[in-house]
Image 1 (cartoon, rainbow, N blue to C red):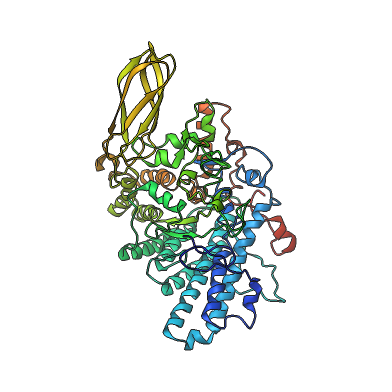
Image 2 (image 1 turned 60 degrees about the horizontal axis):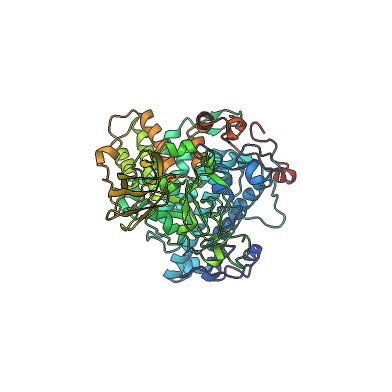
Length: 615
């Protein structure tokens, strides 16, 4: 179960609320008198972003859209629509909401970093007390570094402060160069990794390997492209230094070997929906939790599985409010046999009776949805009928493997064996090489006679999941072609296909287990150039990590956001001129790679003397 949410939550065997105290209380002289109080303050750093303004909604869903794999549906004036459609302005409230919670987390971290070393038990306590306090100090440094790296990722140069806010302080900080901030982030995360435990966590607290993995990501962003103050996309001249530091972190992790891929890609997300933490796959995650009455939205809960899930009618499951949709060209980019294709992208809706329906209207592709957090996989708890308790997983092991492939490709001017092995581990899992069971094939054994309309096909048995098909065409009142909506997964024997309705008789549809592809069919081969391999990685990261909150930023650090939006717009227009993709005309290069400084902040902080380029 997810364990750290709200301002403070107890850590234990299940999610449980703790009384919230004003955080300023932690800075007073009567706090930090023992490890329990230090622990409460440390949990408060995590809790700063366990909400809609942080990682329950805005950061992974609103601020990561629109891109080449997903977009926010509709065209209203809601803040969560105008920002993804590149129509936001500095006054748009979501910018300030996210800015504020990140800085709140930083200030809480600064308090803990200052106060813990002043505690008597930090220097003179028992060995257990010292170890516990050192861990908390490491967590505070990691989280401060993480929150600053996120501010830089979203806004570039930002105000920078490494001391806690006190009465009388000048809180009007000027903008600090992003690379100066990155230097402190790297220092914080390195110092954190030195004192954090190596054991895999049993909750959402960061450990040594998670800190190193996140530091590797920070290095890729620091060494990647970003929008400079003159409105030009640039990367630092010493960018390879950052890649080398990332390589060191990744090599350290791989030598320790704490992580492994779940052999089933679908099970990774079913586990997320069921609140099974799976620390060997999910390296770092933000806890989210419904703390009170299930009616309506809860401030510390999650939009995962509600806002970015297949349209679901209330009945067997809670309803959804689909707002983050995928785009058809992304679905069509998957190869046959890739289990991520029909799991990650839901071309179906879920009816009140709990059954899937595949809409066939010409515009149904506009409402294809992320499928990873479908209501079908969730707990269906009474507290998750609107928002959910699904955590935001910030880093998965497959992400780390793909970063390793990218770093090796960059530093060796092309893919070496390490790069190929890393990307191919991810691809082998995607194609189900080690996943129990198989997909299925369907064949028309007998087309039957007398079918005046298309009959219904029902697939049952075989031990697998979610295979679905329909009759595509009839010829002379006989079934002559099928549409496979989903080949399913996990079948250990051929299921039975029942044909009903349509006015005819005698049709026989035979299912068989699909053969798994060979390694030669799956693996990226040797011999690619550096650019060819990077192009492959750009595509592979989209397929593996889609809808998980990093796609837009990945494209920015590769200097590809504008290019990919233009390509996607052209592809959607080729489908039909009315296919909605507002980013195709709204996105402005040299502007939208960074967000504007929130007007609320500039109104009170006169030291921010400029706006980001184009704003």
